[in-house]
Image (tube, rainbow, N blue to C red; front, side, top):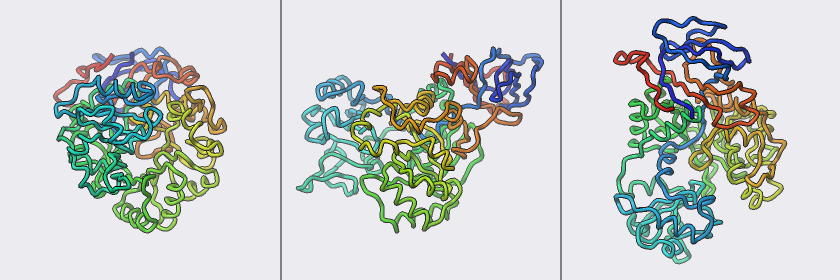
Length: 486
């Protein structure tokens, strides 16, 4: 099992660097201080024999959702592969004791389990407690009648509240988290210790939280978990308030990135409204990070950006369907794409069945974007997609579904290109990959083997240790920084 080190000073001996050469690397004050063929160990200096294993910059997950990921781990699994039918869903919900407020929270639901679930159907499955179940896309919550009554759904005015022909709510809420959250029993955002440990085990030292419109309590919780070391990773935010000031890169506080705009499939904005919103974001000095899944949403965004004008750093989140004829437009506007080919390995068979065959080539494009001059970054979208970056890298290389079918083989990336798409800085997704060089922050991942061997069959088991360069703390001597996880 890999281990996590919060380090200020350490000597890494006989490491394979990106260029293929082997060298010693000295970390001092949380930064790479020296790189040479051989360095002498200083008195009291911790030393690690890398045994020729690759020493890489720490991986950056350019799109995930921290608190949703933590909550997901505490919730009932309601979809494949754990649950595959109505009886399985009933058993899963019955197996979980309600929380301290009497609620049951489910995640990962898909229509293949029990159809288009609504309050009536959910009542038949579990009527005895308030239940809310999230669709695996993250875009939809389904409430049973007890839950609907508890949040006063019948009097709600959010446009995402689905209603039947009689005007009564169906129990289905589309992209209504901001409306639902304050009506739920008040709880503190979940602690991120387990998430941070799992990310470190995978070699991830920095993440971009892509949750839109983060509440003040969520922002404070992330900052607190970073400051106390509960969450060791650096965090870049897309959901910070529009007027939030930028912050310097630090392991102790989050930084502010582009501003997240969701072009929801369930209700696209008008062109005029979108143009106005983009201009407001740009006027505040922030680029836009646009959630775009469908072809229609992509076309709308491109037209809006032509009218509003772009800003360096503007980016597309997901790009699940990108027609080839629009790649040139993306490049001309300087847009980056942060995508998730891990979905192909996770649910590609569903895509092969449900997405028209003519659109298969447009699913989670990778290679054609790079060749077309579009900056490409890879990410997980966890908890909605697989968190493991090595699994995502493998998916980008193989593009195989769970059943072994290949979707758009021409979109495969080389293993090195896929890895590099995880190595750009959080504030420059799709940019040049970071290198282990003197002066850089010592956010590093050490592999058991050389890079070529690791990339021949990408797996998290190749990670030997993750190092996160810590700032000097006058109350803690460098040698006192412990190995937090073995």
